[in-house]
Each structure stands twice: as C-alpha cells, then as structure tokens.
Length: 320
Image (cartoon, rainbow, N blue to C red):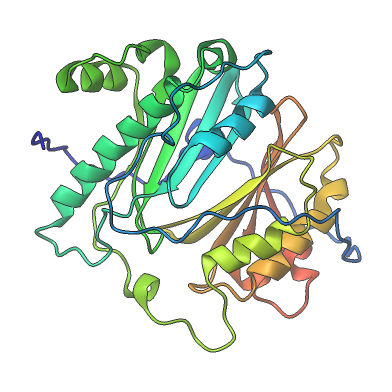
C-alpha cells in the first residue's frame, strides 16, 4: 500500500453541522402520545468480516437509471454496494445536493495501539476515497443529481476514523486513473470533517449489559416504524471524542416540527437500550426533494429516560 500521512489538528466530527450556524430553542412543552408509522422489515446487512472492503457487487454491467432521480439512485446504491454495513441517503443543504455514505470498514482495528493509529487513519482515508469513487462510477446520473459526496468511515465497533465531503466535479468517472491521480482529484475539493486523534473509548468494545441491544438490532427496530415506501430514510452510529452519536434521517411531506414528534419518540424509544448508550440523537428531517426541514438533537439522558416525553421536552432545534 502506498504510504500516506496526514497532519492532525483539533478537528471534531461535523458532518452536516460543518456548514450550519447553530441556534438553540426553548424546550417544547407538548407531550404527544406515541404512534407508529407503517412498518416494514428491511433486509439488514450481514455482520462484517475482516476482509478487504469491496467496491460494488460483482455484476458485469450496471444498468443506468432511466430517469435521474435521487431516491431511485439511493435505492440502486443500496442494491449494488457490497459493504457489510452501510447507509446511503441524500439531502440538500445551502444549495448543495449531497449524497451521504456511512460504512463499517472491517479492516480498521478498534483495538489499535497508539503506534498503530496512524496506519488506521490512513486506511480509513484510502477506503473512504475508494468508496466515494465507487458511488461516483455507479451511474451516469451521479453528476446530474449531486454536487457533493460525503463519506463517514467507522470500525466494526462504530468508532469514527475519517469523514469528509468531496466535490463530484473533481471526481473523474474514468477507471484507469493511477493511485496518485485518484487521490489528487479527490482531495482537490475535499472538505475534511474528522480524523481520529485519540484511541477509541473502551466502552465501544465492552460486552453489552444484560437487556441491552447492539446497533444492528436497534436499527432494525427503528426501521419498523417507517414505511418501506420512504426511500430517503436511514440511521447510523458514530462514536467520537464527543461521545456516542446516533444519526437519524427521514423524509417528510410536512414542514412542521410538531408533526415529527411521534417519529422522534419512536426512534428515542428504540434507542433507549442501545449499547453503548447514546450521548446524542441527531435528527435530520428532509422534504420529498431532500431539502432539510430541520435538524435537532435529543440528549442521551432523554433517550434513556423511562419518561418518553423527555425526548420532546429536551429536544433542541439546531437548524431550520
């Protein structure tokens, strides 16, 4: 593997919030009753193994989409990508159409020593770039649909190692690029979000307490509250220096925050038994076109509270 090293600064995970001016809102007083949206049983990814990260499933040809539609592309990507655990969604933020990818890289060692951390970060970067090129080459519609591709790379214990946003126009679809050319193009318009600087917390690899649920089971239970007819919906976990972050995105035909209280309660309820326990539930609600309606946060203590209404009472509106 080509050697590559990166200078580390005081960088925190920013993902969507990198571009936002955050404003807090007062606590909501409404306490809605919990309701369930139409249920579905999505096919969940298999448990990752320590094998090289694949690009796309071994299909001789990938048929182009008949119509360039972001929802259709997301569905196609979910059917074609062959990572063990991954999430693909899309959104529009401040004029940019963004395709988001989160995936578990089984080659990253959650138990890496301080001396091995640099190699882990380098590997996360290289696999992150590889994943972005995979999405770029998946269909000719990518350039027409998206301005940016964002990727988050985590290990099998969901510790974040690398995240960044790449400009689609800087990613040539050609498959005969040299390693150096691919990296040069990818980093030309790259906005770095996160590089791990410290060893992962011990809690990420500790055996779960009795009665708790792991992330894959928690994600499956959350999905049961959302209809399979809503393609721009998914959930992922990132553990960084700020704690255990559960990101939830779903689409909605309504633009009122109050109409999403039931879904916020449902996600909080299913995440209450997650191990490791949630420190922040980040809620991203978009419209049918992917435009952000609002972004908010539910503190971990509210997620774990036996009083379900605390998820609403302590909900913080960050962007609207």
